[in-house]
Amino acid sequence: MRVLIAFSTLVFGGAMFGLANTGASAAAKLKVVTLQYWNTYNVADKEGYTMEHVVIPRFEKLNPGIKVHSQYVLYADLLPKFIASSAAGNPPDVLRSDIAWVAQLAQEGLAVNVGKLKGFAAIKAESLPGPLATTQVNGKYWAFVCDTNTQALYYNKALFAAAGISGPPTTIDQLLTDAATLTVPSKQQYGLGVDGTDIWNMAPYIWSMGGSFTNANYTTASGYMDSPQTVTAVTSLVNLLKAGDIGSDFQGGASAVSGETGFPKGEYAMYIDGPWAVPTYQGANFSDYGIAPFPSGAGGSVSTVGGEDNLVAADGHHVADAEKFAEFLDSPFAQLAMAKQGDMSAIKTDAAQEVKATPYYSVFTQQLLTAKIRANSPGYSQLDSDWSNELGQILAGDVTVSAGLQAAAQEADQALAGS
Image (cartoon, rainbow, N blue to C red; front, side, top):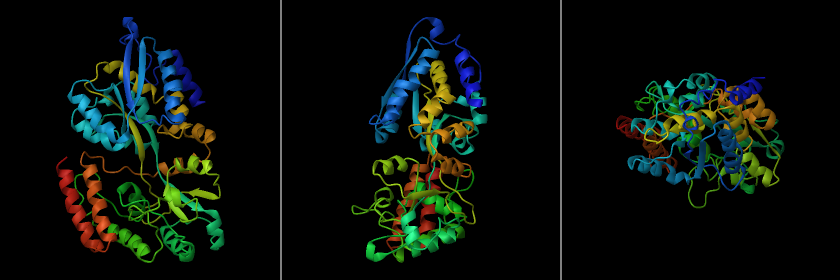
């Protein structure tokens, strides 16, 4: 019912998503405006096609006089290209930004404070708390939620059955025990895959075991990144690695096998990943697996919020129309169309329709209710690098867990202070 009501509101000019007021738009001035929308939508599959041929045409039909040009940009190039174009006075009107970039772009004055817009209140009320938090910096909102994701636990049913384990672990203690039980060196089978030392991959373990990376305001890491709880969490994983129960993906390197590659081959019995892994396994005709919430520990069952936000460029040439387009991208029509292509909706009331269309999303929508965001700070990228580098030294045996985390915390303090 909510989707139908919202959709009709959108079509017939209601104000739910702020689309009713077209008087000040380019359409009312009887001239065509073309908005530039930079994004990383995959043009090799239906994701980019759906945005360009389904979502954008719908917006253009509802807003005569406004055209939208969707431009694909490589992920590695998108942030520097946006910053450079803004400095030159010619940024795209709307940027689909990685959630980790919003704080930096807001601090540099390159984003519009969309929280003041009339239509934002309704979107804010309907947004999932984790994704919404990624748009907020210093009490103001600098972007619209776009899409979201998180990671959950994938487990190989055949390997579990062979080991006499009836189902996925529900607690961290069970996870650690099962990882050892499921390891079979003669078959090059590891009980657990951990796809890297970065915070995206490590946070579910750290947070669920009661650890943390920074304080709540993202201003300091000392006392958090090196807290007893964080030390205990990292020590648990280090011990698994030393025992041979974690695969090569953890430390990385040229010969490392990722979880998504090793899991369907039986090299990893468990690992965490997002909903994008499912189409990969469908294409490989691998289906003997399950997806479960991340196991609970002292901190609960906590995973990491991922995804993108839509940011309106402060120096754009058509700000009012860009705001209109960004609001439309949070409408039920746009959100559900893109959800079918793997981009989970950041609007909580779309979840039921989303899961109906894509049933395996159910675990991820459940996980998002307790998922946390990474440090929402311009210094996050450096903080993440400091953490990952020091953890790599710990795994290599060059420093102890305590010493490595203390060094990481001190380095992260500088990154946060510099922001």
